[in-house]
Image 1 (cartoon, rainbow, N blue to C red):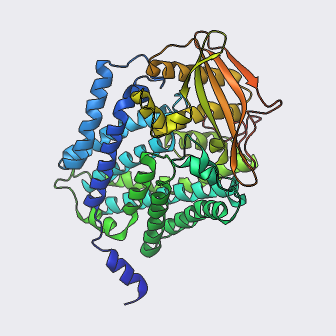
Image 2 (image 1 turned 90 degrees about the vertical axis):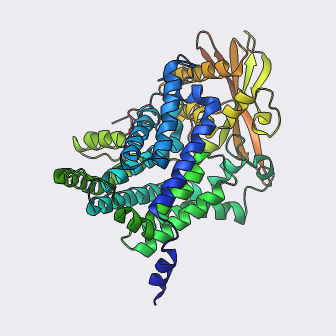
Image 3 (image 1 turned 90 degrees about the horizontal axis):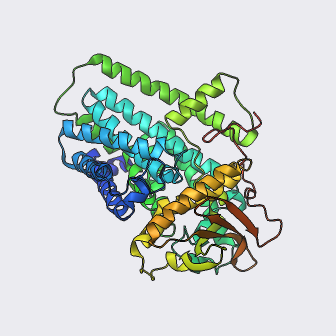
Length: 489
């Protein structure tokens, strides 16, 4: 027996579709549990500001429906499982996809995106199992193709944005709002073999794994999937990514050969008996498979080279990418991780009264305001506050957009903190690399009047540009939220 068949034979029976589905639904259930203390913040308003609908019947009903759908996927028969997966897909699409350009929480960022991807994957597989084996095989092919491109592009973006010059992963490790062990890592040298190795592996493993998963060879697919699972298992020990890290450990098993076979073989106990439905689904999926590389090439040419496709192709493909969605993963590049903010409640004149968010917020102690602390420790909160301040980099010509997001986010903080302040002061720290350690240098303050929404910048370091992208970053202002086309176009 040659090496490849022997490896595949050893993997046979290790995991089936039912095993994978149980693991995924367990993670979705844990996610539901972890959201309970911050439910109002994440889902209490269509604008994501944590106001307006807190404690209402609508929010309670949404919460119950969310749990029912998770349990339906885990324990229901074919019809219930299909309906429950559809319910999750619709709900996740609204909160995690449709609101990502309108909510200050950015649709929960990559964790929300992958939760939606997971729910949609389950729904497509369950729907295909009600048709025939060829539809299941096409769905699994499309999911493998999609997942492989997601991983490949995530690694490519890192490589093109500074990781190969050792300017990336180390910031996340030392950043208080992202790193579990930031106190330890901030005292280590930012140069040397370890940071360089971590950056090369962070981008290189994703690039190689993405390519391996795209290749039509079972052994390479399994190796690529295993590499991603192991890499995110390692990352989960150091970086506060919440459900995203563990979900990315489990999702790649969808690409294992035995799972393919078990999902395709175990058709549902009933069939809808509509041949045209099978043809329509397979045709749609093949169109998606063909368009995906085209969209990815367009996005990267738009972003890195300021090259746009001829109209109307550019406009149509951009709209298609936002609808699907097909995104450019900017996960954990320096633009997002080389700064952080602490927040102080102040009097009317802007003098600090009480620290709302500081180093103790991200420690194991100080649980006096336990619900607020759980909120700040949730990965979606790190995404939210980061996204508010990256607005300065993504849309420097629109200060009103930043002011609006900061005001809405401030209103949300005050609602959860339990003590009113007329003014909030956001201390902006830049993470700098010294010879032997990292330093957190305060660059300035953003002081916001919580009643009027007026924002005032106070520089500590004269001339510091809060809107300047990180070194080697391709970030520049786009024509609109979600668009890769430059503003000048």
